[in-house]
Amino acid sequence: MRFAIACSFWASTSLVAGCHCASKPPANASGPRCATLGAPAQQATLDDPSIDEASGLVVSQTHPGIGWTHNDSGDGPRLFAIELATGVTVADYALAGIEAIDWEDISLSPGRGEQPSMLYIADTGDNLRRRDQVEVHRFEEPRALVANGLIHDVQTMRIRYPEGSRDVECLSVLPDGGLVLLTKTLAFSTSVYHVESWQRDTTAAARLAGAIPLRLSGSARADRVTGCDLSEEHGLFVVRTYKHALVFEGVRPMTVESLLREPPCVAKLPRQEQGESIALSRETPPQLFLISEYVGEPIWKIPMTTRPATGPQTPASITPPTPE
Image (tube, rainbow, N blue to C red):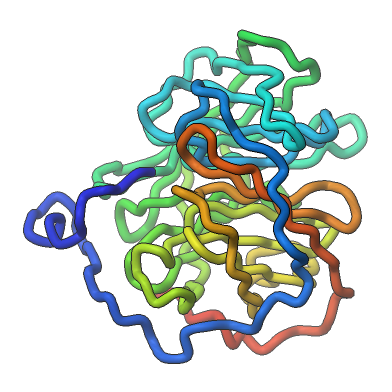
């Protein structure tokens, strides 16, 4: 979400509890370089004026070459299908009966057998830390690409955090149906929350599973988490900030416990005006896609190679669970 007001202003008010204005990062300000990422290539530009605050991205399982995206706060409950190679919007849908407060990310649970692929929308943004609970919406991935479509069968789960309100712009769905959510803070770290299973029409309690240090650019504003995605098939979990990607490799099995055992490598991302989206493609080897808020921003593609799974790793990049 756009956050143009200076932190010094917020620190002088009581609007944002726990606003961190420190500008000095911890020592050892970088992780190992990601050798598995290739050179970024600009695919196209996202020129649709209806998509002026693209805040989440996931690659379709049903429609090859298509990405699903949505706007940040200020728009209605709308979903867009874009052609990643050209940036052209090929379909759009409204979610019936759903309110869009602050949509920040989108995730996909792949279909298996007779089960269809499912899309999850994270209405979890909370810059002002005022929301007692947030929402995640789930629905079947559309099987047809149509203009002005309407999605009726939408399930909703409410989520509460144990320490109170949190601002979250990263949501990923684990293979077992659990949810992983990472916070967006100015504390040079992100807290990892876990919801064990989908609980329709109820309020679920998120569990604080751990924290990941963000010792990347040295800027507290730049080193905030703005998106994520995972691939069980490739054992990958990727997290983005405004300037960098953290790549967790060889995460097998794909559980929150395995994720927190794997130290990530770090890659600098191409410059984007307000980069808040990252997505893994579904082919082998996979590719990373990046989009940004504002009309006319590039769609970037970064080729990847994968490495085989390894044994348990020393949790060098993970700290024990502590409240923010």
